[in-house]
Image (cartoon, rainbow, N blue to C red; front, side, top):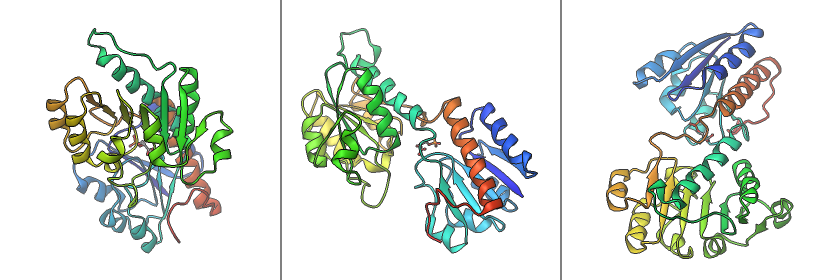
Length: 307
Ligand code: 3PG
């Protein structure tokens, strides 16, 4: 059995070692494709792989079809919008993610970005503090829960909205559940996005919604760029000089935002949320174990595509 790690953005070395240990212990073989520059390299590497561990790497129809022996793809992370699930099902390939394994890393970055923004990007001028401010967590999954935990340490007032959870499920963590997306944005000066990129959420964070946020608003995006209506955000930031945007996923209109809103906008050059040794190790080893358990025992827990 050949397991391919295909990561354009490589894991920390210790994570690769941990994955190798799991895979080789059961007599499987490990192949490594990192920092590839062309799709052809991925297409070649996948040809004889039985399983693949990936991150945000694009697994479209062509890649899935090229994997003639491919039985399982595990996205070492949360979001699987980079994988064509229908094509995977059509080719009898099981797709899984590793929910929660990198959640703390992403949540910590939310506060790295938030402090950076409210201290005026460390430009020497007087900023503001997080203490006592209202933070809205948009979608209360694994990352959202970690954000809430850390926000309480900062002494923030924490609110959350999640259409898939009851008020009780959210409020048991000692935070406030709101009834609607509009109420979250109406209430909170700071919003942290944790929604996946789906047909429903794409472009859903638009000008009208963002304009509900109180004065001196800060939007923090460690989720996906596709959920933002980029033209709407640009318009809103032109209209509202009090609005700041910090993101871990570079927008398509990055250059324009940077030029127009210097001092109110920041993007990491490459998505950094899950880029810690701990998150890489947790997600990578979970992925390796899920592959072994699937191949040996048929365990499909964490499967995300239809059969
Ligand atoms: C995720 O969905 O798990 C995060 O966005 C991390 O993505 P990455 O593994 O590409 O850094």
